[in-house]
Amino acid sequence: MLATYHNHTTWSDGKSTLREHIDFAARHGIAELGISDHYVLHPSGDEPRWAMKRGQLPQYVQEILAARQGAAERGVALRLGLEVDYFPGQAEAMIAAFDPWSFDYLIGSVHEIEGFVIDGSPAAWERIDTAQINEVHRRYWVNIRGLATSGLVDVIAHIDLPKKFGYYPTRPPAEEIDAALDAIAESGLVVELNTAGWHKPCADAYPTPDILAACRARGIETTLSADAHHSEHLVRDFDRGAERLVEAGYNRVARFRERSRRFDSIDAAIAPAAR
Image (cartoon, rainbow, N blue to C red; front, side, top):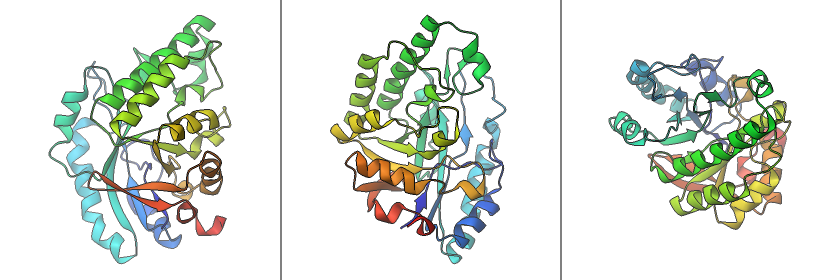
């Protein structure tokens, strides 16, 4: 069964509407379509332009729920999700914010380290020196560990995001990576194989094969994601993503509904056109 969960609409920084995503899914045999627009509860109170406004959350939920029956009539099960940003000390407030709603899954991300936006633009990385680059990578993985232990989410998004613009650490934070992956395994979370990285300056999916292998060694489950912002990208490079998963020793991917998961075979996760 073809499914895709990490997808954005015009509610946040996506370029396609919910209706356009549903139309594409119905035409291309996508049986489960998840919508996971950005929601940020920033400690400063700021509302990033690439995320929905906090007051819009009820309308976002209502639109997706209202579209479910029509989508189902077209053969598409519409899943309600969010991509939420993790900040230390904010987990309880975020759990309270999501409590009124029956989400199918929540995806967790770290996009910022104390004001430094990791994936905003390469210019931010150009302005810092090697020691600072190393420290951003190290602090990022510390926050991923915090996210994993927060009880907030079901899926960890683009887990090695700091590589996006090709600014790699000269001293990889191996200890912090191991601690983060151990926490993910202990919390029973899923790590996505995110194909969007193949279209970024790093030219590599998230995560790298070595991190994916480390996930497999710990028994961490995975799911395929395209991090789509356009409808035509909903299952982009799922064939390549599936190959990477198989190479790492995976034979199944996670599916989500009502904050619980089940599993489907890798073969079923590949877009029909890519087989």
